[in-house]
Image 1: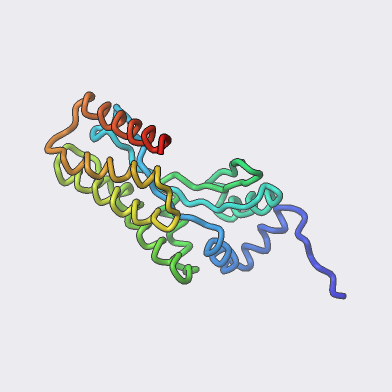
Image 2: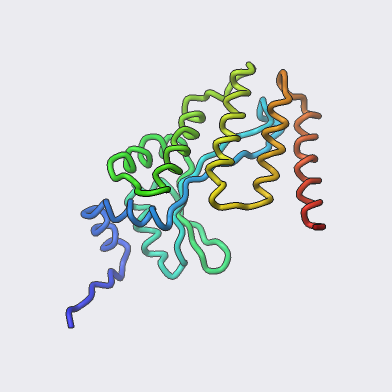
Length: 203
């Protein structure tokens, strides 16, 4: 029987990944996710901070693999424990997504449906990177509407009714704005989402 190399430390795993970068792309095809969301913040001009993330998920039993994947991308992310013995290596900084993550997947392309998810996600990273949402004009508001609609489509495969409801409320609220929202408008958005999600619990 041929001996199997089990790669018992993250340095050896990293060396393998560096010599076989297509493995990373193939692994992300199954275990990676490209996500986007909003944080409601009263300090934000339009009441919303858009965010993008690239995540790879695995059981914490494979923390060495997660650490090696982070190292493969120059340790620009972080490894975080989640519930049920699940861990995630996450990349959130826009400059890292734009200058490191996106170019890698252009060079080592994803296959199947994941490539379309990636394409949508790239357009969201571009909105934030180019600051299309920053400013007090309706064009800036429209960039946030585009972000909200595309991010909703992006998350559709991982259907979550709470996120769906939250997205619908945000999109409707943004479309109804004709100028910069007041603090009261932002608080009303927060309250509308809270009420809608509380009502969901009673169903």
